Figure 1 (cartoon, rainbow, N blue to C red):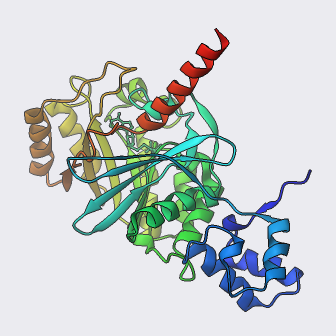
Figure 2 (cartoon, protein in one colour):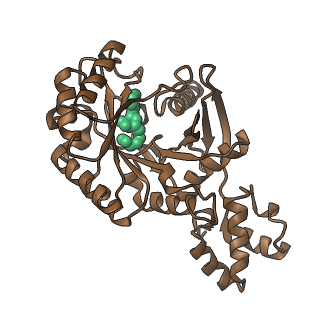
Figure 3 (cartoon, rainbow, N blue to C red):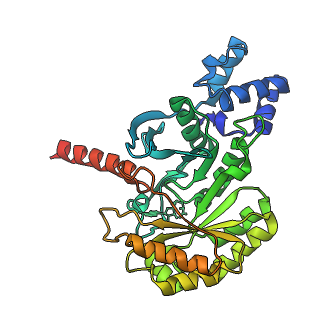
Length: 355
Ligand code: SAH
């Protein structure tokens, strides 16, 4: 059977063209788009200002994605909420909702699993299952907004997956998310984090979006970076710095360097001096992340005095730096841990059933 078109993954332009073929005027497409992306309707049946026959026809022609809420965990420390959502094919993804003074932020996943293999990351332990569609990335935000009843103002693509490994869907997702006829989130409030796929970083620069690009650097020499991140075998730090420079030249947007501090691995004063040398010539901001230990690996967090000393060293070198607040430490904080806990439990159930 032919697969139905996923209506929530369409831009307004595409939807208008599709509905025109069905003999509908452009304003109908806009109404439908608003039902999906502003009123966050759960299905065609909710679109009460559209005729019943149009709704039925659309139901036959298009698929309408929505997520099943599998689990919600709330941090007692800071109110951070972690959501585990079920997709239509039975896979699960996790998303995080965080409250800051400047507004509510949602961290979304871009893939089911990940194939990048970063040594400290829980999301990659079972490899990549599949890419998420634009609708499935949007639905994480829409579901959270519906469930919390609060408006999301910032979106970070920093959950499970490598967004640049799902480039076309990512781009469409950003366009729909920031469309003035949709949720209309400002591009400046959208951050995309990458492990550093250089050609895609350059391609993104050419799109001239106003989003923030965050680069997961984590080490200051190629040799050290290769020990933490397999992608470093493909692209050198020199190539990464040149891609960052290009991104800034095309967009005027300051780059963020993410640097997860791993005790005894990348947290010495020498590392800080090298990081300052890399960051200094670029218009960038350094975000230090105390590594979140995962049970499958033996990495440990740097001591808090070490983290502070590392930050001071960068500041002495006039680098703009912050330490990421650890949100939701009491609720399977690290990327991919909630999803993993869930899939591990399923595996145990299956194994028990087989035995
Ligand atoms: N694939 C993208 C986005 C997902 S990860 C990327 O690599 O940037 C988001 C950030 O969290 C990345 O900087 C990643 O390296 C970091 N990260 C992953 N696991 C972590 C852990 N256990 N502790 C600290 N940071 C972690």
